[in-house]
Length: 69
Image 1: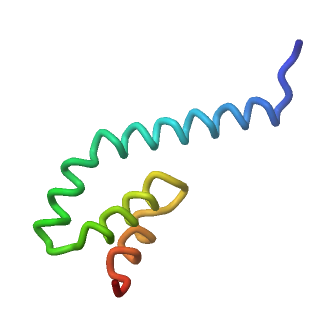
Image 2: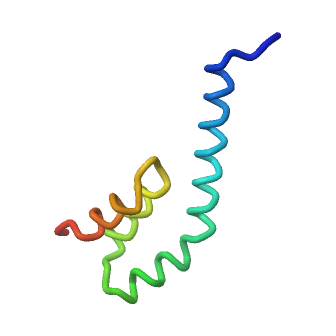
């Protein structure tokens, strides 16, 4: 059975998403600690982390951190 281009692309996107999530989980303690030192709330940190775990960019995560509570 031959894989279609869509199947291959879907698998690549899935793998990329998994890699991104694994990296985010690995860096979470340092991410949290540094943002707490900078005075961000737990809620803001959690929201920014969710942005980074998904398809969001660093710029989008920073925007989330700076939104009013």
